[in-house]
Image (tube, rainbow, N blue to C red; front, side, top):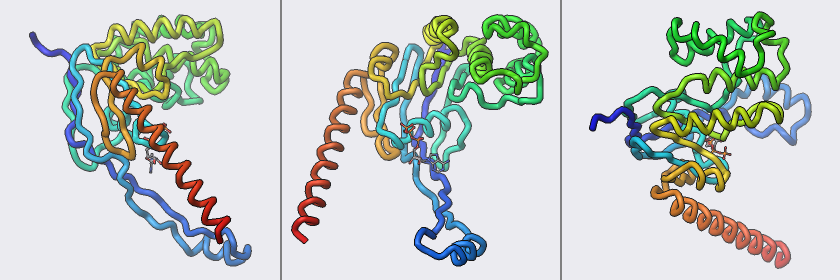
Length: 269
Ligand SMILES: Nc1ncnc2c1ncn2[C@@H]1O[C@H](COP(=O)(O)OP(=O)(O)OP(=O)(O)O)[C@@H](O)[C@H]1O
């Protein structure tokens, strides 16, 4: 059978620059001012992803889990092409959609209709395809009466609805997302959930990063556990969630041990 969707990451490593400023906390205002002007921040590179490899084939719904700062969002950004890895490579077959920040890339001075074209083009859609999409997007977002209003005059909820309607307007083979987006007010949210479910069901591959265990069990069949930028476990989602729970327990126990040690040395000294 011919493969129509595949996403594979090979030894992905990413170093990001950090700009560190020397602590100026305890100085007088004059020396703080002086050092602010003459002490440029120090640049250091930090390894945020370290040698990550995995493969997703048709039917895979992969959940990425890990503690805060483990590298989940950064890995999603590499998968969507927002970051180019320092080393390693990706190979993929199929159209791909990122649902990471649905309100990113809007132009406040352009109209609602123009923004649909701008975002659609940024998503790689052709003009003919876009012409057919404008009305359905406006209808879904319930913004048909505001199509020629400037975007900056919309409320934040209306902007979210528009972003969601555009981002989910087209079914793609591969969906990469960080949370289950259910945008808008109570009336809109059910409609948004139904659309999300249909897009996820229609996708051949889904990659989802989340802290929500229920959602992971519900949507995913496989899991990846990241810690400190490394892939520490990969397998069926139940096993990954169990490994994640064990890692959280080990981390809490370690922290409790450290606090007890610090307490003992303070009272002893
Ligand atoms: N642009 C950046 N420059 C430097 N460091 C960054 C940058 N973006 C993220 N990091 C660092 O990379 C690490 C991983 O961040 P990331 O956002 O991928 O974590 P995460 O697993 O998604 O965390 P969370 O669960 O809190 O959302 C963190 O230590 C973060 O400080």
